[in-house]
Length: 251
Image 1 (cartoon, helix red, strand yellow):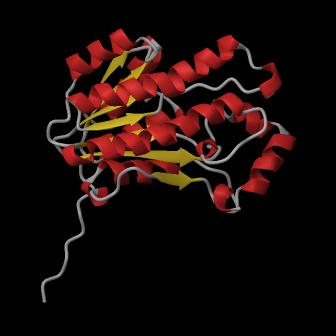
Image 2 (spheres, one colour):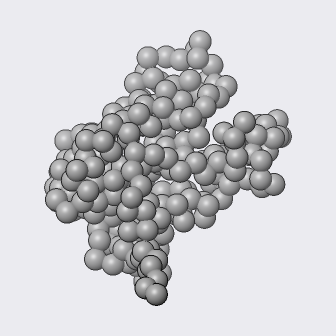
């Protein structure tokens, strides 16, 4: 009897672009990809943050480089992708949030959040896909809020629902080129950015009530799904999302 072989999770010889990859979820993504053998290019706005992340990755024995980039600057992003690409993997973790009641949303806040979370994500995928002549994997770090609503999160939800929609459409268009396009949708993950939320007893109680598992999310919970979607283990998966939400959206 001939037994099937488990597809490899290794990424040796592949190049990965990880915007927002210097802290929190993005850094976890960079570590997961580099740990599987990919050469990782991390990008962020902070020169110090980029330098610190690259130094830590290299100290751990990983192949990495960094670039200072504001992803809302499409001309700069195109130049970075042209200079450091082509890439086999895009894992976009760049994003912002300006939470507040929908009735109080300003045009400035709307434009800032949509400019990073949706506009930049859209054109980043387009630019990276141009260089994927032998196929590739595009992963957008979306959110559980791309599937449900949330109080004080109307603009954020709008952008993440948009990311889910564009991912499906891009997967359909680029599938014939062997480019897979998917999202990962985390719940609230413990990072320095979410620390104030978890420090608020009322907010923490709300989160713990919605998550069905008996704990909150950690960065490590995102790393396995990222590696899976980047690797040949997910070769037949495109146009969908992996919800890393502890059962939040099961209701």
